[in-house]
Image: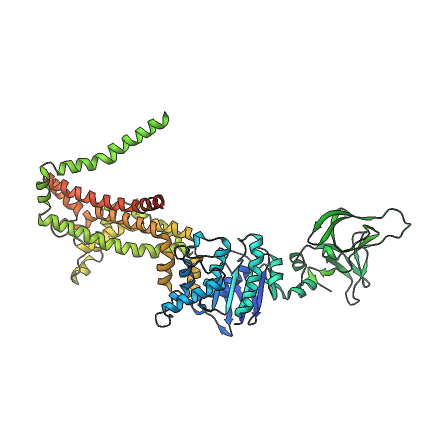
Length: 354
Length: 267
């Protein structure tokens, strides 16, 4: 089921900036989209607006081309998993899961045996077949997560909305449930929108990543595209550690303010003027020093090993620049004439200009 | 040492202020023996008073419970213009003397009141009749259910209710299956407080009822009437009965906690 958000505007009285500022988003059928951004960016607000839980001042939300009005119109079509699961504490797991079927009007409600079969099927799917009679208070975080998911899927919705569903889980459970969720999405042919503040999580599971900031969508692209061509300095910064070097472009060359940075060529169509080069620490290189020219001006100091990279710190002017080298690269010189940042992206006034 | 002094003082205070009155009432009621005491309840006016009190209490509790749940839900879930004012107004019956609220009803529906004559012409009697007593009791007992349910509902949060709405539940289903089970304890507490208060309401009812024996006399009014007529055994018997009813309500209120503790011990 495709989701189409068109120019959604949500304001709150008293606040200057709107919570959602003309947000438009198209999610085709079967896609897994992650909404990322810092807290207060409007991710959860957008998700709740899509679910119809909060009113919006202007704009529309459509499912498969039909404009949705209230939450009633969406009932059964959208499954929503809340950040704190929001299970019904006084109902058993089985009744929690069956809730969406139990509240159907008598005319359309499936017979009891069929509801029970559906619950058993979902419990199996969630890999918690024995927990039907348990109460939510007795479950672990990961189990509650699965019950919440089963409840959201009970009515067979086409769209699954997840609001930071892994927030309260420990890292190991988190990682395994993440891949399991992606698998579930593919198997059931769902259209999923996941809200998370963890960019790594988003990069791992999503087909497309939507970066939000201040109630607006800053960039909407595939993980790869996002990594290669971030639209703004914020996106670059948000997706992972980045180092920025202010400077200026002149005659097809980028000159950083710091002496220890090797100038590098940029496409000729880029107009002269100030610009900022941003680069990931693992993309930085060292320009070798000529053998007989005295002590090297740039020197890398080891800072340990993490995630397959050897970490170094390089003193550039008054600050220390992180610099990572893949572990398998041996015999690398740790001294040099300058830093090579020719793989950097260039930004002007906060927007990509390369 | 200080602890025992405090402990002793507390018990002494409670004995004098809380325990003595019911004991005195009971001993006064049984002064001429239990037979004489029970005989006074056979009086038709006494029975009418008992039935009227039970009737008024039943109506009041039903109306204020329903209204209280809806009002608490509205106040807990929505922020609207006038919410603070409504919250403050809910305190009014607690702070205002019941006599004043009784007078207000007379002012509205009495023979010389704003709507009184018009309603009289349509043969609808409110002041000096049962509807007036119900209205006065409704006013006095209005805050209890809202006040006990509201904080618990606020604490409960709205996520579960939103999940229920998204699952396709309609308003009454959400209220019945999701919102209410979480506030059961508070609701029971509020209902029983309302019951106890409705049983015993004197001031407001006294003003609007007109004290017609056998017709508009509730138990508290009847007790006063008997006592002023020097029928002290009858007065204290009725008082004891009313006291027992009120106490039963209060004990029921504590029952869930006892039950939970008992169950914990046996498991």
